[in-house]
Length: 284
Image (cartoon, rainbow, N blue to C red):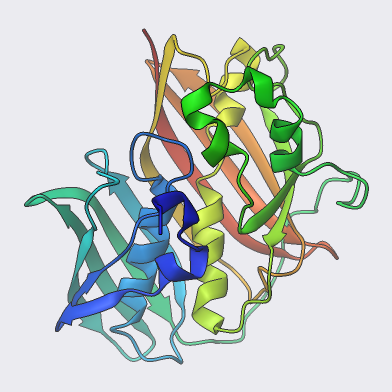
């Protein structure tokens, strides 16, 4: 099976190599390196494999150190830092060719009751009637470089529908805000996979908000874009096989670094997760 044909659930099924050591498979989404969201998701699964099921992950903070090699599996080493009465803490290091490519700290929390409040979901059109990103790309297939055409127009495990689509090859400058509806393309039956798939999706297009005011996208050859760090907080349970609205905004881009943050809402307006990321935005 080619790397572009590896399914998302295959990516989440890690092989346990040894106590606290796991190995994953790669999925090619049209980049020359491992997609950062894959490393996030696999690190989450590896860490969760060392924690009791009644303590789901509530936060993860990671740094991307080196580009990941698509031709080699990543191996995940989990350090069990603490198991307390309510919280557990883990550190995960992803290794390729003897070097760390990613490191993450994660915290797990047994469910508790407490006071609650949340931000309101913005008013945007629902996903019905919106065109999926892959269908938009298929409509401009002749503009995609030939070596990327097959992988960028392949069927995808996530149905991603931008509210206001942007031409990836000739974008106009616009404010640093993006709204995207997304959901898994098939039912997700494992509780852990809902969080892992959201982690996978959270890295997809987030830095795009930092590029929009400058009329740039990931497909511009004169700009280098790469995730530097990534933080994700899970607030409430959710299903990733039901529609989620991903709201992204970029407060600042400066010093060749773009900063972006996002929130995930259910269809009925419940805020379920938040994310923040800084990435390299370097002119070539």
